[in-house]
Length: 504
Image (cartoon, rainbow, N blue to C red):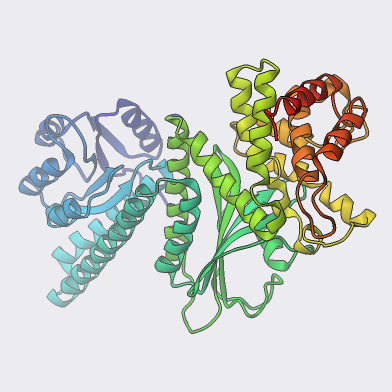
């Protein structure tokens, strides 16, 4: 229950917006609030006012938070100082632990965490002062030892957070990021297995892409039926809150071979793009709240890194490389389609240039061509690699890949035109295609270009169930498709390029 009169807090930060928000929040809570924009101004306040606790930013002009903490110690070493920083340094931490710094908050800090920290520090300060006045030497020693243990734990925690920030900041490409993050999960939590899933909203499925164990990383595919692990993942995606099952007793359908389990959503532009999972399958160790905190912090930093790439326009090539790597994992499953996406892209670009497409349109085709079959990551191997013809049910599953692919690209929030091309590259000019049955000008123009390039390369490639089709027959097939499967005006230009030897 709140007291009639609460303590007085001093906030020192060069960001006036933070001071205004803190003043309004803690004043409503009944605290006396004083503010200063730097250490020098704060020291002048300390000469005139009694302060019970101080929040100080490290990076400030004239006098930073560390110098200010040292000055406070010389004035009154019973005033606790809580440091706020966006760039925690272990060296700075150790050098100031003896100078009144009792807690560290990493920016951005929400007001509730500041309040929790304040209540804990003030409670410990009251106990500390009471012990100094009323308790015996042994009781005072116990309190000081407890405080020292807490500070040591804080130093250890800060060391881990610094290591996470350092490791994440060294990552330079998206695909490397996911593999490195899985390795960090194993290192930080001593998990037996960690996995990365991409979320497919269309089918409400989580597609496992990479998995790491003590023996190394493995590229994964999708299973047909949703399993209990995937159900838990989708529940977590819906809640957008990390999940911790410290001791699995089978209550949520989780297989008993998994002794302890965590799921952490990965957000890009405020949308859940994928999730990390960690499992313990042997031994006596179990995941704790601290493990969940570390992994949540790590995924947050990874998300910030991706968004920072976007701000500086590095994200385009980075995400292309990432998704292209995923495409290569699909092609690696089927040796007969290796480099199909690259060949289709090259043919589509030649055709687009002949049709006087703009540089922007050609760049859109470059991305869409490389990613047009990425949705096949959601098609199981027994269908994708079937050596003979597909039955109707199997073909219906194959027809889902443009939708799956477009949803994966859509979640990145960057490539609207590319996403539409991926979705519609199997539409037919007469409206008999899939997934939406678009016809003629309803089909995006660049999708009509990509459609011809895709079919040309596909029927010109060797398959387990047929040999390579002869060139004349390939061109005859394309010609017959004009007006039904393909845009006849584009077919005309395509055949002309083939006749000139510009497409082979």
